[in-house]
Length: 216
Image (cartoon, rainbow, N blue to C red; front, side, top):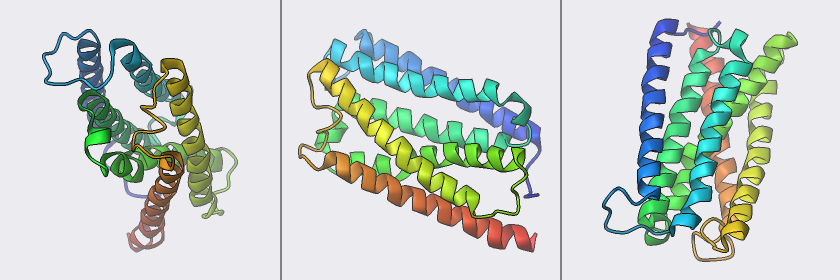
């Protein structure tokens, strides 16, 4: 069993992360109602709403998992914490990007999110799914099942994310999601960067389990 810090430390970290997530959503609401004086807001009030709801849905999905997998919380609380930390980073960067038009001002901004926080959040989510599946079905001898599950899951999650961006653009009659880089290759590039990010995540996972845990 890999070394894990005391469970109470992870619970404290989760409490802090949840508090920060709530702060982000309070800020989100204040921005939506134009109650925060900002130099520029890139989207209109109604174009902004679906993106707020999308960010909220991502967090509510985490809370659903937290309650659905209640009996696995203590054993895999480190994974839950990592998921929430990456989710916090992802929704914060997305909020900043939509609010200050960072997606169009900086060509690297959208790519950076897909390559790091978004792909790693998806990777950690499917790390949780794969690990619980392995434990439930006693497949601990199949080491490569988890890395395969992560990469396959990120591929599926990336497609779903891009489809959700496309649907939001259809609803709002904008091109905020699918054309955030002002060219027709944004969706393909996002999918590619998500997969690269997942391979980085899996590489770290393999190194950690094959070398660091064996030595300990």
